[in-house]
Length: 302
Image (cartoon, rainbow, N blue to C red):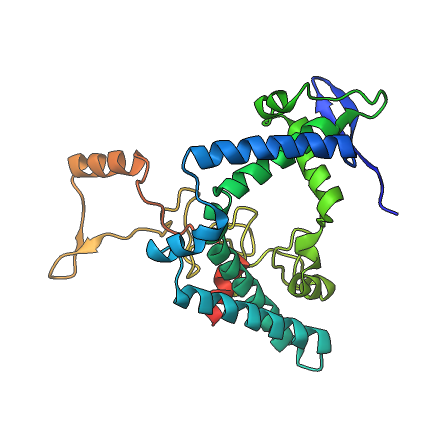
């Protein structure tokens, strides 16, 4: 039987407090429906699209197309086929790792593609009304665990305090309870579960080598910030050349040569100007890799 209450801790001021979200009662649902109706009417009055008309508008404006729909379907198909292969096993471990990384990239592409639609769908009259109903339920179902007193005075109070930890935690906990959202959703995806089981990623799903060091999708060492480093932790560029923390190359300089092969020494004035320029912050940092996500790496491997 589903739990009727989910307890969570938040910091309020300098104290840690136990709050809880309650499963909505019929009274909560009626109140939330009234909020939905009001929000829906207001959205329609302000010119918001109905969801039924959204598809045609997206096509007319070029936001969505037959080609994008085909790409969407192909991505889903490829991900499903990958999941089946990982579930069956029987292939080389290296091939399975490559497949899992490829699936990460495909899933990232799918999310990006879907987000183009969901942003518009959330702004339809129904989308705005559904969001208001959800907020109403969170505001009325969030209570202090010890007293049962509501944390938020009303919907407006909840919205005004939406940036607070209590509001954010309440919304997440309520969604998990009502819609069965999994806190470990990312870790439980087939590709990530495989990579974790065979120690190809750490607890945060970042790629690691056999020694547990962070790497990019090509196996090159990176630090916590995604910067390329050598075995001693010194900054390098993608090709292994030494760079400073700012991304400037750190080669031992030798003088340029004239046409006869003799070193050309800088004058004291020119050398001072060179040092002055060197002290100025570089406008462009070399050696800082594109903070590679596994998705990007997987896409490159395709």
